[in-house]
Image (spheres, rainbow, N blue to C red):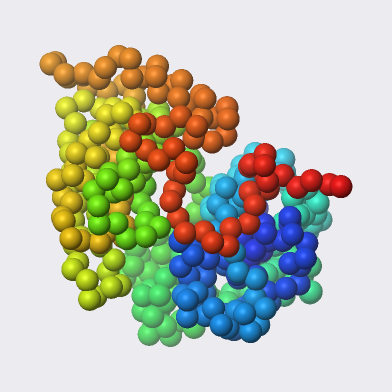
Length: 418
């Protein structure tokens, strides 16, 4: 059996944990730089606040309806997510973290368990230990557990946040209820093609011939079909090292001077290097991207990128940062107001097993230096040690005018009980 555990309105729920006055009130969370709405509480949804709404257009609506609006507090959300996932590991060792607020669980050898009671225990423990409300769907396959979770979320009073598909009758009833466009793994284009074939529900999809599905679509859609039929074909994903690592961000404001852009690029490159070292990888290539604000059509536009190949693989922040800064210096144009930039490291190989270069190699002092920097930054839970061309005050410069305290990751923001 598989379970999908999904945190309800996760970002809004995290804000409510430490600010109980928000319980029962409409809450909205904004994207980077306070751009648009990326998370809403059920109360905000009921008022008609759409997902992706640009806040500058909906500011008056939010004030009129007393919707509490917050900037994204990623340190808080990331820490709360980690706590939830650690709790899930107490119920089974087979956990696949699907997103910041979702995880698949597989129950091997749980033959005599009452899964409804077990799922209720999961919900209760997460709520008691973290304050985060969840819904749990359990079924014989991953795809069906998604369907079960959707039912639990849609009918909270009837299901009490838990739904188990443990019979053929329940499976067919669930598949006839869920629309084809709401099935996990079926996107907008695929749903239109299936609807043209007469598929209105997930059940209709399972009635299509196997051979036709494989021939018309791919093995992925065939596996999804078999999963929905109750024949498990989609397995838990094993954690794998990434083949490329990217750090891209929109700037707090538009920048037209090279110095500010160099500082941002250096910070992005350093973040990529840290991620490389976490998975014991090194890169052969650094790609830098730079673009102006495409929404401001009246301004000159410039969007470009540059790649730099390295003669030897490295994970050194010093080398990767220098390469990235050199690249952005070349592609930068005077008079352009830039809004977004990014650094990608690719051509990844294991740090302890790669082809050596006959004439060129990394400075042997870099590796122990990087280990020391990573250790100190990990110990003090913030980036205290940076390169000389980075801003010493902040890692990500974002407009966050409605930011709540980082209750669990900053000692200065811990709640004081009087």
